[in-house]
Amino acid sequence: MVEYHLWTPLSEKDVRKLKIRDVVYISGVMFTARDSAHERALEYFGEGRNLPIDTNGVALFHSGPLVREVDGRYEVVSAGPTTSARMEVFEEVFIEKSGIRIIIGKGGMGAKTVEAMKKFGVVYCAFTGGTGALAAKAIKAVKSVEWLDLGMPEALWTLVVEDFGPLIVAIDSFGNNLYANVMDQVEKNRLKIHQSID
Amino acid sequence: MTENIRLAEQIGVPICQDTGTISFYLMVGDKFSNLSMLPDILRHATKHATEAIPLRPNAVNPFTGKNSGDNIGESMPYIHWEIVEGNNLQITALPKGGGSENACALGMLEPGLGIKGIKKFVVDTVIDAGAKPCPPTILGVGIGGGADIAINLAKKALLRNIGSRHNESIVADLERELEELVNQTGIGPMGLGGDTTTLGVNVEYAHRHPASLPVAVMFQCWASRRASAKILFDGKVEYLSHRI
Image (cartoon, chains in turn purple, brown):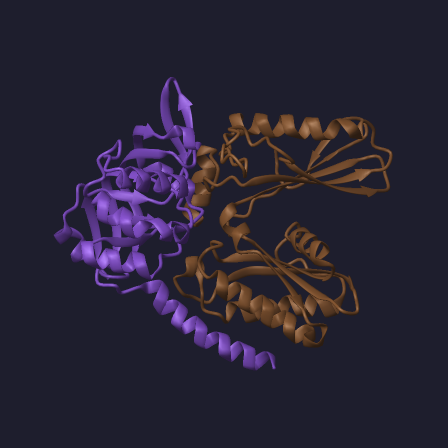
């Protein structure tokens, strides 16, 4: 296990060195996108349009932040990760078209996303679900917000962060998957538990 | 997780950005007055809390996809009524996040599968949920009644404290056993592996139809939030869960 402090924008080389169980802190730029933002982004890509923000080399954060407006400026109050599995249907195309290097979320992603991560050089990092206050502390500013018509949680929030973490590399760019390893063991435990009940 | 709790308390912000679907459980004394005003009062309180705390707007119209922006909507906040003897009103607010709610499950088991079938259903539901409900979770299990009754009982079980035991020993024993079984799954905190998958299992039951054995499993994430207050007949308020 190695601890990395990374700055965006990240190159393919930067993320290829990361292995599962490594601990990462990110400084620089990240943006949030959940179900609706992914859906709209794919519409944009389908029409050959550019997204309203620059996503190259930055981190995508699966999060629907809680934001308040203070003196005309947005301030993130609490912003933990949301369940990444919901974005599985969009993420393969999103990775290819957006040029992101890191996905931050909780619970991991499915086979199609993992394949795209291998192909394009992206890692998936787990941030502890429910730790919204901790996340907000590392978010220094809201750079921009787009697609606010989707509602506060679903909008595209671009954030300036400093030492955002600790993040655990849960799926690396070679397809090693910490969740899959755990679930393999859990499936074995399921059989044992069922036997103990009988 | 503990650092986050400390920080949230220190700054005075929500522990998790998903401040949930807002529901209220009311235990209404039959002699408490002005009951018909309560739904409006609770809607107003929800709107106020959404701005003041703030809470994340989480009420979305399922047809248009539009977020109401203030946590108010059709049947939102949701109110559960229970009438009891007396002249007080006890209100419990249970804001519940979407991640843990999405993992909830109802099983209409063959009665022949019995208690063993219930245990397997609970373990399988927890395993199938994996990392999604933000483990270590608190589990509410509702057994018997019908489909809706089992779900309601499971949710009501979440209102009890962790480690509080059902007053019937046969149910309390099942709670203990389910805790052990779930913690043997190895899912661990946030699905990254470990011995703590649940912080506690609470079970509630109702008598069942001879042909049915409904079992409902409700997940509550580790960042479980809930608050209770009692409003006395003279308008005075006693806060039961928090010091104000």
